[in-house]
Amino acid sequence: MHYLITGGAGFIGTHLTKRLLREGNQVTILDNMSTGREDRLTGTKAKIVIGDVTKRNLVSSLAADCDYIIHLACVVGVRLAMDKGCETLRSSYLGTESVLLAADKHNKEALIASSSAVYGKIMRFPISEGDDSLLGASTKASWLYSVGKLMEEHLALAYFREWGTKIKIARFFNVIGPYQTGSYGMVVPSLISKALKGEPLPVYGDGLQTRTFCYIEDMLDGLKVVMEKGGLGEIYNIGGKNEISILELARKIKDLTRSSSDIKLISFLSAFGPNFEETSRRIPDITKLQNLGFSPKYSLDESLAMIISHYCSAQ
Ligand SMILES: NC(=O)c1ccc[n+]([C@@H]2O[C@H](COP(=O)([O-])OP(=O)(O)OC[C@H]3O[C@@H](n4cnc5c(N)ncnc54)[C@H](O)[C@@H]3O)[C@@H](O)[C@H]2O)c1
Image 1 (cartoon, protein in one colour):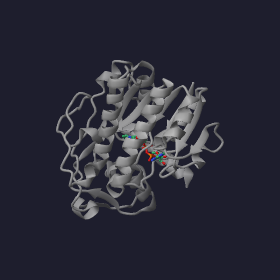
Image 2 (image 1 turned 90 degrees about the vertical axis):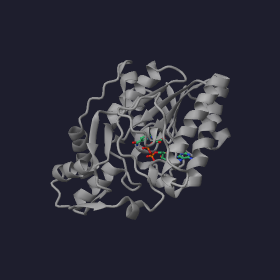
Image 3 (image 1 turned 135 degrees about the horizontal axis):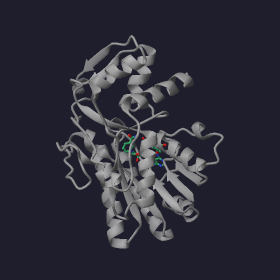
């Protein structure tokens, strides 16, 4: 198979590209390198096209030569989206529309990467694909990322219903692994890099908010199940089973790295300003994907140990 991966030079895209190539596939990446890194793909057989996913003609010409489109490109993460609101919404809408138009024109299937962020702050645990979204006021810029991902989903589903465009949607929950950067506020790489340098470990609020982390290899297994066995026009949660509070996570990372760092509680207001609203808990219901054969394997301790060892060997 020949895959076109938008955003393929990012954290998830790099792992996905390497796995697809190992399995004997061909991969073309389209990435504007805003947060992506070309050097991690050096020596692979991936074809890298540097360009923007919002450029319709470019996406269409690349899609014409491939068998399957995986759309990962977007401004990723709550913090980055807060700082780059216009680009976030613009690239979510125009980028996803480019992909859908190309998929429709060339009769190719497209997998749209969404996020657990679409559920917002709804208090339902675990949360499944048909549950409601609950987003805060538009004056709180921290909902921008969620709005962008919801817009991608709505657009893809509208193309499916109205034009029969072949799409599937995967909602990822807090994926972690080597290559993920802490520069844009992702909690695990940020805490690990600080712990290894002996710097204070920032934990926001009271630290009792929880997340459920999923190791990249498990997430890629889930993605494969969605692409091979998922239904068109369907949405699938992809996540792990490792729920932990952020305070407990910081303690665990401190222990695993044998760090002398102190854990420092910082209020959300002083860290993110008044336009931020936190989600207190997120646990995916992965029954729908489990029924197709998905089963995440890695514990949080195993995942963190692999990431820390990757950090240490890269230094
Ligand atoms: N990492 C997670 O935990 C997580 C969780 C939920 C959803 N997701 C989704 O998975 C996808 C990949 O996320 P990631 O963690 O690998 O982030 P990432 O920032 O590492 O990757 C995104 C890639 O897209 C590229 N990009 C951004 N805007 C672009 C544009 N306009 N044109 C072309 N390329 C562009 C970036 O350069 C980068 O390489 C995203 O759609 C994200 O919303 C990730």
